[in-house]
Image (cartoon, one colour):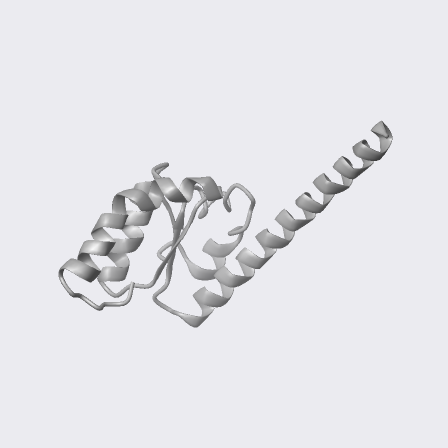
Length: 128
């Protein structure tokens, strides 16, 4: 019984590892296709320009798209999302890359009120 549980646990972790790899590959493909499609798209995130990000998803992006379009940001999720929001309000397409999914709430929370106020309160129908 113990060996069966151990085997199931090992298989579960292997499947999770494979899913992460597939998810990273899918993310990189989406980033590349989007940046090729839109010339004014800016990709921002922590250590994504020089280092390629924690999971190396953006490795080689600076050589392919340039430093103007692939930018490093400080370690502050709300600043990253805020910069993306500001760029989109000015008409520049932007994508922000968060290292881990749990950080997205820290990034969105401060700017949620700004987004709602801009759309509902002012009546601005600008796409963001």
